[in-house]
Length: 227
Image 1 (spheres, rainbow, N blue to C red):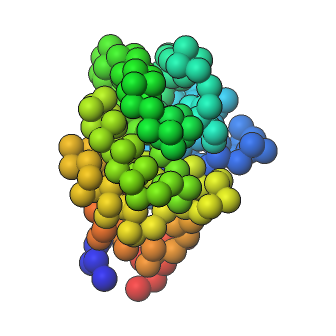
Image 2: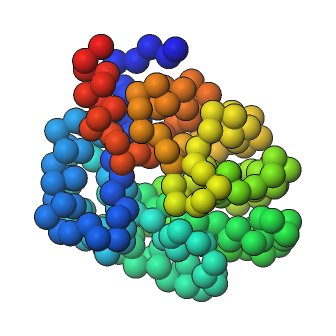
C-alpha cells in the first residue's frame, strides 16, 4: 500500500459537503475543518460558494463548487451561465457534470462544443479557474469512458472526475482511475464517490488519482494519524 504523510494526503483531498440540507453553520464548520487539516479545498454546492470563499480567503484552501449536479443534462448556455456565476461568487475550481447522454451516444460534436464553451469562461479569468468534468464512470462502458477521455483532452479540461457519488451505479473504482489516467495523460484525475476509508483513498492515489473528493476526509485523516 502507498505510504504517505499527513500533510501530503491532506493536500490531495477536497473536503466534500454536498447534502442539499447542509446549512450555513455546517458550511462554516466544514471550512474550519479544511483549514485545520490543510485540505486542498472544500467542495460544496454553489448556494454556499460566496460564504465559503469569504471564510477561506487568505488560508490557501480552495473554494470548489459543483455545476449542473448531479445530472449534467442542462443546455450549454445554462452551464456556461452557472459556471460564470459560480466564479464571480468566488469559486476557485468548478466540478461540472458532463452531458452523459452525449457520452453514451458518442456525440463528440455536442460535448466537445459544450466543454470548450465552459473552458473559455474558466480560462478568461485571472487567475484561470480549474475545470473538472464529471463523467460518472460507473454508469459507462469502458469504450464510453475512453471516448469521454478523448473528448475531455481535446477540450483541454484540467481534470476528469470519476463520479458524482449519487448515481445508483456506484462511485469511483481503482480500475476506472487507472483507465482514465492511461487514456487521458494530459488531464489530472479526481476520484470521488464512496471513498470513505484511508485504504480506499490510498488505493485511488496509487492507481493514479491526483485528487480525492470525499465527505469522510476528517475520518480518513484521523485513521492515518492513528497508525
